[in-house]
Amino acid sequence: MKQVRMIDGRTFTPSKIIGIGLNYSEHITEMQSKRTSEPVIFLKPNSAVCSLYEPVPIPTNRGAVHHEIELAVLIGKSGFNVSEQEAPEYIAGFGMALDLTLRDIQKKAKERGHPWAIAKGFKNACPVSDFFPKKQFNNPQKLELKLTVNGTIRQHGNTEQMLFKIPELIAYVSKFFPLEPGDIILTGTPSGVGPLTPGDIIEAEIEGIANIQTKCVSWNHVE
Ligand code: MG
Image (cartoon, rainbow, N blue to C red):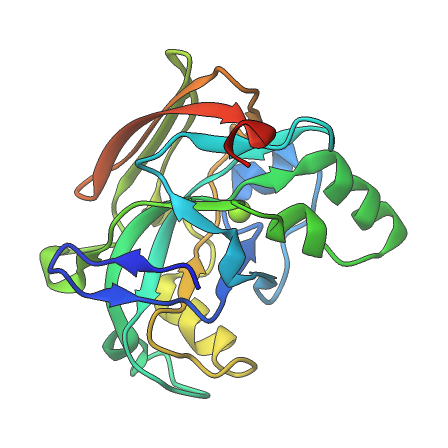
């Protein structure tokens, strides 16, 4: 099973990665979607986890692969149906993730009313940074996110723009899925998503978490 690291040396094995869709209004606009009254949820399996400190493997024959930079919340203790007030107690720390998305496949799935499982859950669809203990953050709801590809800024937002805030997301998710230590919640992406191809240089930064430069490689290249 894939593991993620905290900078204090602890390791966690995510039983699941819970993605939140459409949580920034400008991204909803660029997706030609509509704001929802409840969070949009999808899952990635443990096998989607890979390291942002390594080259990012990109599938090359499955249509467009889009980057989505996101604040990742690492869950530190078990819980079910937790309240918004209790939600912060369940957070171990924060990290940075790319919610890689097979956009053409997702578009088809949306048109047909089919699940997004392949579009969001394929191998290596969730490169993540190390995680940092929550005590290091004064306000995780006010962090700049920035992603450049080959030196051009594609995404630039702030976690204050989230429509559903972190405690709301944890409470909502936990109505359906028991939270387990190591689980990761991806909190949604600001606007500016776009395609990646092998050879692209990505620079991903979330204020107070990480600034990582990495390269996209062909998926086959690493198999
Ligand atoms: Mg996303």
